[in-house]
Image (cartoon, rainbow, N blue to C red; front, side, top):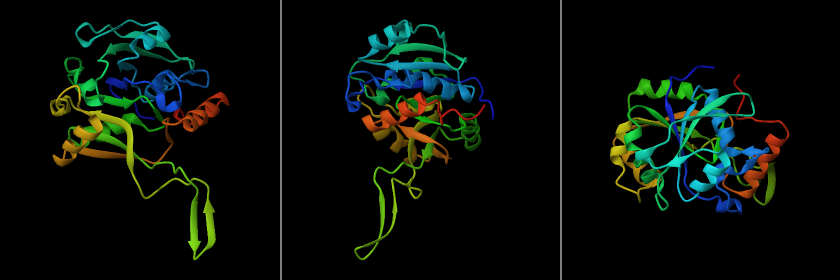
Amino acid sequence: MSTAPTLESVILAGGRGSRLGGDVPKALASVGGQPLLHHLLQMLGESGLRSVSVAVGKTAGDFASTLNLPCAGPEQAPPHRPVSLTNGSASSLRLIETGVQTQTGGRLKRLDGLLRRTFVLCWADGLCDADLAAMIAFHRAHGRAASVLAVHPPARFGHLQLSGDRVTDFAEKPQCLQEWINGGIFVLEPTVLELIDGDESSFERDVLPKLAAQDQLRAYRHLGYWQCMDTPAEHAELDRLASGGQRPWITRR
């Protein structure tokens, strides 16, 4: 397992987990008895990424009380504080309030003064076993402004192979190996922030297309484990795995 240089990681955790059927932010939803955020921190730590800023919004109070950490805006950003994780490791964490109505791009833009060199950006709703140190090395080698983790999406439905009306083969929810999607992890240069217009800017819909059009975006292909947590069923599956002692997103020791 390679070791990443000491870089800041940013986790965007601005909304509520309404699609999970509750009012708890996704990053604080319980997965195996601990917040999803703890699994994210362990995942990042596996690649040597232990300095983390969590950009929060309307649920800032939930994060502050659950994690027992101070929270303030970027101008008065609190220092990183150690957070002990259940696997015995530790991360250095801070909570930064980035606006109630801010979109993903705008939330990142508000951290402009805190991000002066290469950094890692993560969504707060997915886990994987990607070697992020290798992804950082890939990013540095190609010299563009941005790298995105590219993954194959898990299929939502069973696959039927037909001959007329005869079913010749059936596979229950096979992984789609012909398609690549955004895996929600990026390695970025600070210049990317210049492409964000303001609070209403979406990183996915506004910034990534600009980077692609400017030939400043490269994909790091990951063929291993990856799972998002967008639905109650996906939450239940991650919780089942973690509760049973399985953490496929933590495999490199």
